[in-house]
Each structure stands twice: as C-alpha cells, then as structure tokens.
Length: 493
Ligand code: ADP
Ligand code: MG
Ligand code: MG
Image 1 (cartoon, rainbow, N blue to C red):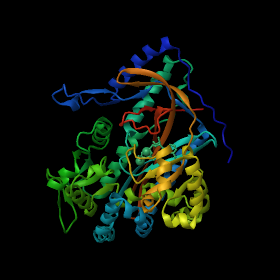
Image 2 (cartoon, helix red, strand yellow):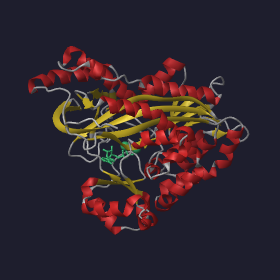
Image 3 (tube, rainbow, N blue to C red):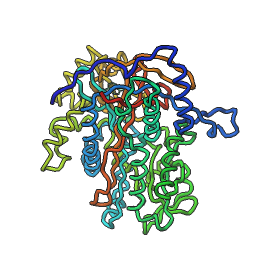
C-alpha cells in the first residue's frame, strides 16, 4: 500500500492578536452548546451543577484523508474481531492466564467469566444473549511510516464520544468564516450523538424488557467530573427513543439489585427491570473497593440484560490480547475463513510492533520478543511498557521501562512491550479553564464502532464517529479527564 508523505504542520496560522477574540467565541460556543465538564467547585451547594467549557483546541489537527477513511472502513471489522475473540473463552483463558497470575484485577475478571458460564450458556440456549459493543480504536499517525498505528482498542467505558461531536460543531463554527483558511468541508461528519444512543436503544429493544418498563442503567463512578458527556447519551436516549436511564454505581446495584433466579431478570432498586447495563465505570481496580462491587458485576453478568461490555468483551480489549492478536497466525483464527487473508492484511495495516514479556515467550523468542527486549534496553525511548490497565497514566517509559526490563521475572507477564509511535508535531492553541496557551502538540485519533448482537443475529455493526485528543509534545500521556490533553478534531488533508 502507498504511504502518504506526512509533514509536521498546523491547519492554520494565527497571529497573537487574532487569538484572544477567537478564544472568546470558542468558549461561548462551547458553553452554549453543552461542550462542558463539571467544575466541581465546592463554592456551589451542588458542585455538579456548575459547569465550564471542556478543554479544547481552537483549530483542528491535520490528518491524511485516505488513511482516515481506511480507519473508518476497518472499524466494523474490529467490532466483529472483538466479538469473535470474546466468544472464544478458552482462548481468553489461555492467553490471559500468565498475566492474571501476576495481576489480581485481570485474574478477578477471568474468575467472573468462569463463575458465570453456566448462566450465560443457559441464556444463550434460551435466545436471550444480547451483547452491545461501543468500542473506540485509538491511533496515532506514525510520522516515519505514514500509517495510523493502533495504540489500543477500548471495549469498556470509551468516553468523550458525545463531547467530540460537539467539538466537530465548534470547529465547523470556527471554519464558517471566523478563521480564514479553514475549510469546513475538510471536517468529517461525526455521528456519535446519534449512533451511540441508537446502539444502546437497539440492545434495549433486543433485551425484551422495554415493553415492561425496562430502563438503561449507566454504571457510573461516584463523583464523575465528565458526567456531561454521559448525560448527552441519556438525553439522546430520551429524545430519540423515549428510553429512561438510571445512573447507578456498582455499590448501588449491589445494595438494591435483585436477580430473579428463574427468569434472570435483574430488578433495580426502583423496581424497574434492567434492559441494558452500559458501563462508564468498572475498568479499573479502584472501581471495586470492596467485595460488594464485584458481587454487583457478577450479578449483572448473570442477568438477561444487554451488557456493554460483557466481562468477555472487557477481557478481549486488554493489552495482552491486543499483543497476542498481533502474533503471526493468530488473527486469522478469528476471521471468517472466506475473507480471512484479506481481512487480516487490512487489520495488520494498523498494528504497531507488539511483544510478549512472558518469560516462556522470551525464552522461545516468540515473535522476536527477546531481540525487542534487548533493543528496548538499549533504546528505551523507542518503546512503551504497558500493564493490563485502563484510564491512562499507567504505562512506563524511558529509564523506568529499562529498569523493569532489566529486572525481568514473572511479573513482566502482566505487561506487554510496544513500539513507540512517533506522531508529527503540530502547533495548537490549547484552551483550558478559560485560558489559552500556544504549544507544540501531539494528537491521538479514536474511531468509534457500535455493534449489537442478539444471539446469532448481528443487528448493528458500523463505524460511529471519532475523537481527537491533543496533548503537549513533551508529555508521555494525555488524558483529557486527567488534565493533560484537550479535545480536538481531525482536518482531512
Ligand atoms: P489506556 O488504556 O490507559 O488509555 P493507552 O494504551 O491508551 O492506555 O496508553 C495511554 C497513553 O499512552 C496513550 O493515550 C498515548 O498517549 C500513550 N501511548 C500508549 N501507547 C503508545 C505508543 N505505542 N506510542 C506512543 N504513545 C503511546
Ligand atoms: Mg484504554
Ligand atoms: Mg488509551
């Protein structure tokens, strides 16, 4: 495949005097259109009621069009890949067992998978298996190769979908004559606000609970600052589908959820049947401070409600599985035989170098793992060391990476080694808390995919929009919620 030439650039050049009035416009637009996060200012009686514009980039970031469109095109294939991997529970167990032996969180998810198997199989037999995938495949444009290389594929709590659609509108507003040289037709459509609620509604309908007053449960963390992104989904579920959403923590569900052992219908604290559990929590050990939260997770897994994600989907989205799928020959096993070779070639266009650190794989030099470790010790800046964690801020770089590899041992089974992707440096105006700063930046692109399956019938499988997050070039990681990055959007060149 031909690679486009990529240059470090910005979508538009702005002089210092032009910037402040544009920032004023952008912040007002953001506030007036719900592109906001909770301020959490204790001055207010209810700190959740006070909002501020989301951290944002004043202008969009250039992305080569052909590869962007390829990343959109490949998304349904990633959805079916997740579904196929999740269905092969013996593959999940074999692949994750060494990591689980070192990492209690992965181990606990695997135990939950095993413990709930009889009920899940019974539901399948009764025609009541409904799975809902709301995925986000994250990429960085790799400047040396011109390819978009996958950073990770999120199968749980992929956030910022709705605020990202508003970000596209904000950049459209900026491009509508406000910033000369910005061409609105280069901003691709971003249907997250429609597709994500529509997938949830399709799963709710398939669950069979809607006629009986079934509701969507958004499983949330206590004290969520990004609740407004989530509230957009709730509002759209109501306006587009007349579906109600309850926001409950795992502790709420543990305390008040009741599972009917005969029907497997989970009744919520307010008495409604649960149609869908959509998790915006549950991806980090901190979300399970006691056994009660694990009990809630198991209760949900044993119920006949649709789940986004199931435990199997969550495990299929781990970094260890991502690494294993990149091993030659593995991917093909999960693709329909008729098209496996072509599909695998397309998916591999997006795979970065990934290596197992399991001592057995290192001894056997599986996939060149031993050579990669030697190279990473010599050049740690060319690699990232990743544990089985979500939510940002968990990876090791540089000297820490080198030290961990040199120490070696079984603990490394819980990590994977990854090629460091080197995106082009851009210039951006970052606006946060009403103040702006011009900086050299790096960006990460996420493509959303939605998927609904009711037993053997795939009801939804499509590319569902995108997200760009931009961080300053000198930071290793960039969480928007963690305060390191801003929301942005792609400008196709
Ligand atoms: P998480 O599930 O915690 O979001 P990620 O794999 O996305 O884990 O890693 C967090 C961040 O680390 C990414 O958003 C990106 O900024 C950086 N990162 C991860 N992998 C790479 C890589 N291979 N090359 C460069 N940066 C990376
Ligand atoms: Mg993640
Ligand atoms: Mg990530």
